[in-house]
Image (cartoon, rainbow, N blue to C red; front, side, top):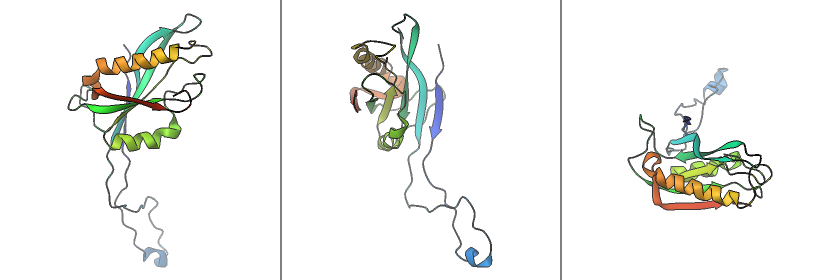
Length: 171
C-alpha cells in the first residue's frame, strides 16, 4: 500500500508588537510584524494521497483515485482520528467531468473555514470523461469515495451518518 502525505496547516498570527517610536529613530521595524486580531485560529490537518479506489482508465491502464482530507483535529501517532467523528463534506470539482483536480486551490480558504468550524472536508479525483472513464464513471467514483469514508470512518474521524456533497459545475 501507499502511504499518504500529511501536512499540518496552522493559520494565525504571531504576537510581536510594533513600537511606533522606531519609525522616528531610524530603526527599521521588524519584517515579520503583524497585527493581532484578538482571536485565535483553529489548526487544521491536510492529508493528501489517500487512495480510495483502484480502477482502470479507458485504455485499460491501472489508475489510482486519491482523496485529500482537511480536518480540524490533530493526528494521533498511528495516523487516526478516532477520538470523535465529525460531519464530512465532499467537494466535487467543476469542469463538466472533463477535468479533475484533487484539490481546487481556489477553494482552499473556504475549505479551511469549514474545517475550523468542525467539519471534515474531502476533495477527490474522479475519472475524467476524456481519457479515464465515460459517464457515469464519475458518479460511481463519488459513490465509491462515500463508501470508502464510511468503511474507514473511525480511522479518519468521519461520522458515517453525516456525509454531504457539494460542488460547482459537474459538482
